[in-house]
Length: 367
Image 1 (spheres, rainbow, N blue to C red):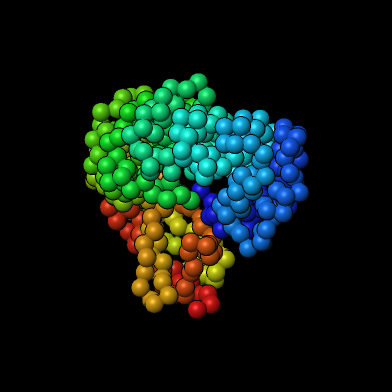
Image 2 (cartoon, helix red, strand yellow):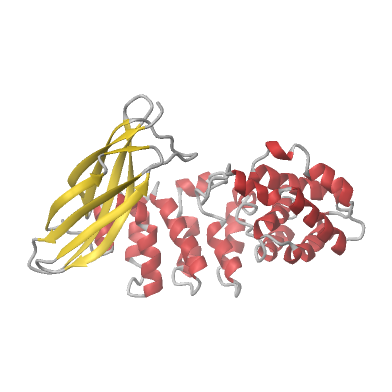
């Protein structure tokens, strides 16, 4: 998911969109105070990030809608399909999260309705945190819904480490309560839903890798949809060389290969320039092998130590005596989550979880 501090993302809630929300709200609710809404929603807008702007829209709706909670929910249901951006519609679900805690059944139904127009994944989490068992029981029924957005919410909303939201500590500690939801969705016909299930399981691998491995071993991995979920769910464990995860995707044995010409070019780059990482992998086996190739860059930190980051390279089958050329390019540039520093950056090539070759490049950038 993109960084929530991105200046482009926060412009989803710019002045023009606030006016759009006000116009559409007035169209479905003649008593809506558009001017008051715009004053409230536009307050100090430049200094707010996207999630702060979204929440300010929700509080502004609360300040200006004329009815009580139940009546306002009916207005939001009419408003949601009229909004011109799905993330703008998330503000409507946020209204439910902020003001619907004492109206559990009505709020959960509203979130299932509103998620069809803008995901309720953030808004459902306060309900889960407050009453986990009761919330998950309803979300289990969502996993059987005809609408893919509702089915996705069943998984996405209870991810223990959902980006841009708070952690669900009880589910971080024990993922077992979400198992019925994940089981119900493991072969969902919608890729949108399956991505959520895979990301949910990948979250769990951060704390309970054995739990995920055990669950996937009991899933029908001969089903292409379930196999896709499993492979994506295991991506962090695979990049970390976990032998059980590699075994599940058929790459559990040590790679019987030779590596030639592993190099990073150019040997020295400036910030903003590209490097190319390349190698030739040749089989030394008498039968075919399933191979997973990754590479790791040891980024130099401000104090001179390094931080290792693993990237996917290629997953492939290699026949006896066959060879495969591997190559990938990457631009070395700063992100909000990573600032580069000058120095020697070591690069490793891993095949089936084992480091088989090393190279390096020198980065020249402002200290």
